[in-house]
Length: 301
Image (cartoon, rainbow, N blue to C red; front, side, top):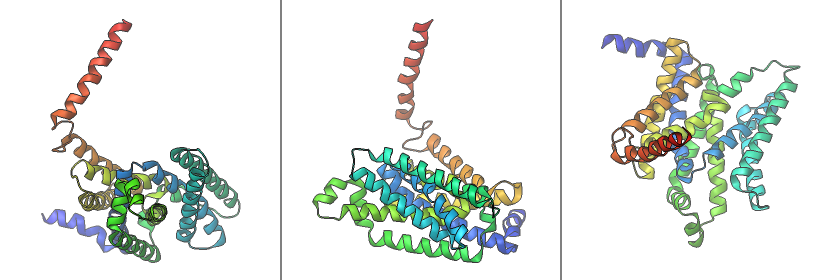
């Protein structure tokens, strides 16, 4: 027991680990709560689109010497507005609009970083994969402010957002401003991604947005339960990944994501209601696939 306490306590003697752990807890909670809406609406691609779209904002803010959080947020909001504009002004579907916008913004970000690197050395991996161990006090403060702001908005608009999330047509018929709610949700996603950039980076932030909520989705049935349990899982994954990064010398962002994926697989296999190994319905669903595959290969022979 004393050895375990020593393992847990040793990293906390360093100020950079204290800042990193606080950031990990905030990111774990924030990503799970906001990501629950993406899970319910089946809009995982939206999180991917916004996360890739913040890169040019990061590059421009770095070039101008401005706060990269602000640059990333502006780029994220611009991408969501552009996605909405393309979707509403043409016959292009939303998923196609997301793919078009996020690939263009990501390409622009890589181009800007390449140009800026000729005069200023930029660590591209720092933006793409994050480095939570290097968070500064000002970045911890920014993450805390964003977390409190986003959670406060969700608490105030919980019923409206839940109604819109599960039944957008019914919400519109009831007189709710569904377009403003949609834009507001996109802004909350953009803020969450900005807050998570230093922890897991542009590439891996989608995993933290989706995986804890998806894990909770396998274990509970209600939205508020998914948010609460997802937040607990997000914190566990973030803190555990951070300790692995410290003791095993792993990159912090990928370590956090891998722990989160490990928790998802445990729930996927052992969930009391939906587990592949514990629920007969899940096993029965595999049987027809296996039978059809055997018949198909049997015919080819």
